[in-house]
Image 1 (cartoon, protein in one colour):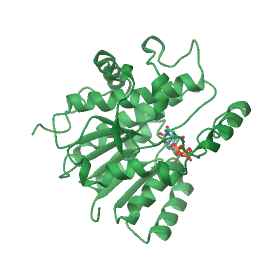
Image 2 (tube, protein in one colour):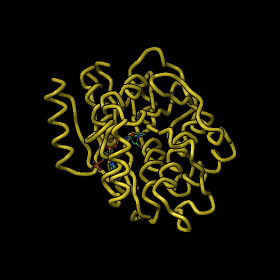
Image 3 (tube, helix red, strand yellow):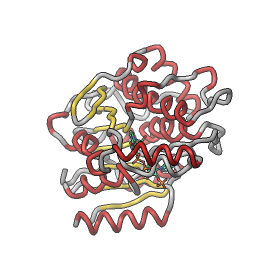
Image 4 (cartoon, protein in one colour):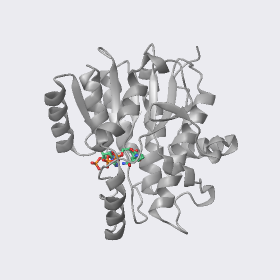
Length: 289
Ligand SMILES: NC(=O)c1ccc[n+]([C@@H]2O[C@H](COP(=O)([O-])OP(=O)(O)OC[C@H]3O[C@@H](n4cnc5c(N)ncnc54)[C@H](OP(=O)(O)O)[C@@H]3O)[C@@H](O)[C@H]2O)c1
């Protein structure tokens, strides 16, 4: 991975941190994106110290805001003309229905739309790599997920789990639809599930009962370093070169839910996501091979 550049979101904690650290240990140059300036700085220092690799930089962007995603992507593109790997990893869990500044339900915005939008914005630099890889961190929670097209913000019947599983199903539908539409076949896109991982995701924006449930549930979980293994594998292994549009678990391909293969839903979600992100033509920023 020496000389390659990886952009990774949500690298200041949990699975994202361990993914970034593992890649830094392979001498991958990194741009980490996190929403808090002091956390970005602390994370960069920590990764540099623990890995001994010095090419680690950071961008501050709250991924719930399309304005900030656009600004962050511009900062990256102003500095780098080539990106080899994009890892969409940042994720969140909200007990209560919460809206972004753009009036979108928070989990749908951060867990799905941020993946969709950031990928679009960074496509010109990804297209300049010989082996560009997009990696979307999903979850097996998608198996219980459904896209509520008639009430995407879940205003009528919100529950944190419904919103989370909807957003994680969206990760896979996005991955498969991107792969079908992708005009530049050298760009690969894959989605993975890290397993049940002992992180603080279920403690940050949760009511006491949900926080307690997560504390008990994660007792059975694997470590964040173990949870990062499939992301690192997909970013770095020669074995996966050219493989695209698949779902992965423990560094192996596996089948995702039945709903995730419904092409009409994937197309519908794609159009809705373009509309919500104000994108006219997703791939217009890159040309066909
Ligand atoms: N833990 C599990 O068991 C599990 C299982 C399946 C899938 N996953 C997936 O794995 C990914 C990583 O989750 P994790 O468990 O490692 O959680 P985590 O420890 O809470 O880390 C999530 C990361 O995303 C960042 N983030 C959240 N909201 C953001 C926003 N609005 N703007 C910018 N960054 C934001 C967090 O930053 P802050 O620290 O500043 O909030 C943090 O860096 C997620 O996509 C999650 O859905 C996790």
